Length: 280
Image (cartoon, rainbow, N blue to C red; front, side, top):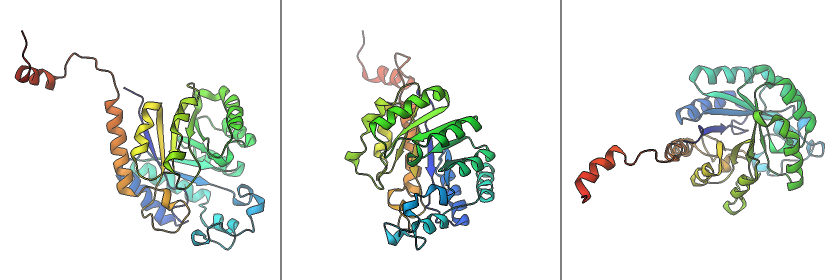
């Protein structure tokens, strides 16, 4: 049987900066049987590119501020709130994780000692951030490959070789939602086997996720929301509770099925053999 498959509910900005809504989302992710509830942490002034500080949100209907910087700041939780979110996760029996977008946020989240820390696609070429996280944090680092050239990916692999036992590399296409024909799942085969493999999906539905398991994926991350009609850039690329629950169910079923047969016949087959098969 393959190693355990982990499902992460990525809450991203779908909580709209509302702490009570975030708690409800954690509770719902737990009821869906997700393994992790994952958040994001930014020092927005540092993490948001300077040319976007005073620019409007590219999609005004999803904006939570007059400028993109104000929008991002409206969606942020501070360290005390992240600590409380982690404590609530522990209280109800789901694990907490977080993506970090800058060195200040990395230091904050490292202080919480979560099970793992994620480096998002937008930061996978920030080697100062990578150096900090790998040096100051002793657990696993997860890192996504979206919006990255093939040359940049190879440079990243070269850097990560020294940390291969602590690294999970995620294949992803950073579009929201992404077309099925632009998922390019066979690229998962090109992730070196000395890394554990993950898949971060921003597509519609759940059928695609199951197909990544035979490709070696042991971590599946999906954006999660309580209501896809809510305001926010990521809502349309997210799963609602029914979808996440079915995904967790199907992933666990696929995991149980992917093994070699170590007996001639199952007990059920033996019983049916006696009833149905002519033997000498």
